[in-house]
Image (tube, rainbow, N blue to C red; front, side, top):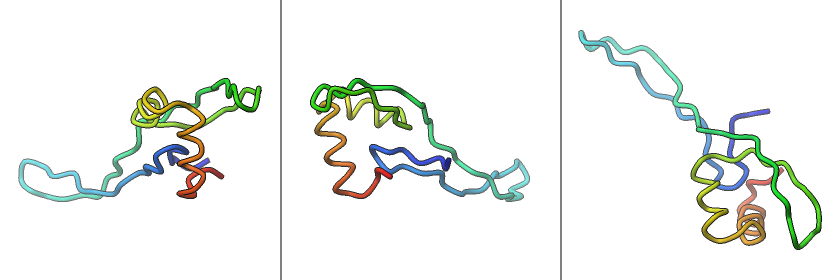
Length: 78
């Protein structure tokens, strides 16, 4: 399973480690992901989502149903 948030679509970024002598080596900036179970009241079922911390805040702000609809229309849900 790849490290992509199913609500916001955030994924790992590539960047550089920069040492004191300014040498650059490649590194990965991973997403702060959680596998979390949510109770979806509209469908009366439990679902398991891989969400980032920003995705959790989005769900808390607009609700699970609205967040899933928004993610589905943007193509983040698989």
